Image 1 (cartoon, each protein chain N blue to C red):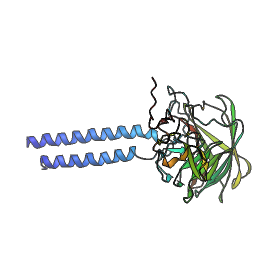
Image 2 (cartoon, rainbow over the protein chains, first blue to last red):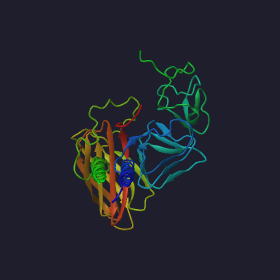
Image 3 (spheres, rainbow over the protein chains, first blue to last red):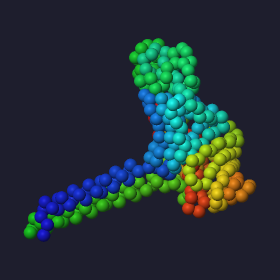
Image 4 (cartoon, chains in turn green, orange):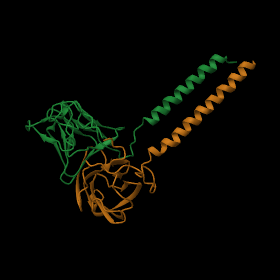
Length: 172
Length: 177
C-alpha cells in the first residue's frame, strides 16, 4: 500500500508532466498561420531570424528590416517584401534564405543602413518617421541617425521633435 | 487505512481533473494549428470589431501584380506568382498564377487565402507547361474582404516533398502601434 506522501509525490509528478506538455503545446509554432505584421527590433542592433514559432513575416514601414544585423529566413518560413518597400540588412552581415522570400512588385532587398529622423536628439524618432525611414550607406545629413542608435524607434513616437525628451504625447 | 483510501481517491480525482484540463487545452489549441484546406472558417481570426486600419499602412498594389519568389527549401521551387487583380473587392473575380519547377512532377498546388473573416482553400490547376516546369492557375470570386488581413498559405506537393510558402500582405490583427 502506498503512503499518503507517495500519492502526493505521484500527483506532483503527474501535474508537472502535464503542465510541461500544456506549456509546450501552447508554445508551439503557429506554423499554419501567416501571422503578423512585424515589429521585431525595437531599438538596438542585432540580427533577426525568421524561424518556426516567430509571429511575423512582413515588415511595417516603407524602409524597414534590420539595422546592425542580418536576416535569416529559415525552412518553412516566408519573408514577404511589400510593393514599394525596401527591406534592409546591414553591411557585414548576411541574408540567409533557407525558407522562402516573396517580393511584390517594386519591393526590394538591400544591404545598407536604416536612418531615421530625430530632430531633438532624444532617442525618439519623430512621429511617423519610422514609417518613412531612409535606406543608405552613408549619413544622409540633417537630423538622421542610425535606427539602431535610437532608444526607441517605433513604439513611441516623439510628439515634439524639437523638445529633448518629451516622448509622450498628451491627448488632452 | 481509511486515510490512505481518502488519499487514493483524492489522487485519482486530481489526476482526472488535470487530464480534463489538458484535454480542454488541446481542444482549444487544435484550432490554432489548423492550416486551412478544410473549407472556409468564418470567424476564425476574424477582424470584426477591430480598429480601423492604421494610418501608416503600406497600401496594396493596384491591378495585376507580379511577385518574385526565392526558395531555399528542398521541395518544389516556386519562382514567380501573379495575382490579377491583387486585392479585388469581395465578390470580384481574381486569378492567381504560380510558376513552379521540380525534378519530379508536381502533384498539386493548394492555396488557402487568409482574409478578414476566415480562411478559404483553393486549388490551382496546371495551365501551361509541364508538371516539372509550368504555370499553375486558379480563378475564383473573392470570398472575403482584405482590409485587415490578407495572407496565404501555399502548399506545393510532389510525392513526399512539400514546399510551404506563406506570404503575408497585411495582418493588422495583432499589430501594436
